Image 1: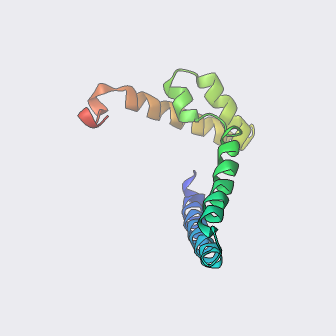
Image 2: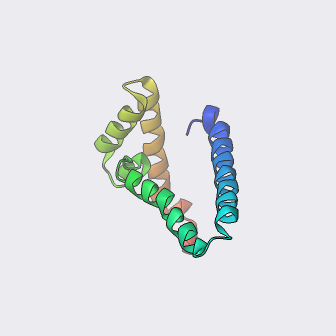
Image 3: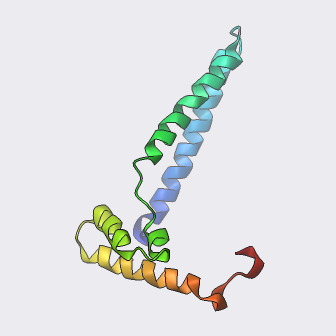
Length: 114
């Protein structure tokens, strides 16, 4: 993400995690006294997982992975789809290609951790 919005994204993710934890605690509290309430808790936990699993099918490929695989035309198409045909898409493509080339260089390897 561009540095101008990165902080807002991190804050939003943290807020959503907190809201999810609070909601889970409230639902668990409401279902605790019911007979078989743990089954309902377990079943309700599958709903957000299923939504997320289905959502994965609609995500584009990672431009960085595409560039590292030598598929720069596809990386460009993904970035153009995300940003529109703007100079920002072209600049980000250049940055992604440079990062992929940097990662390919063995001198920049993290050794056995890579």
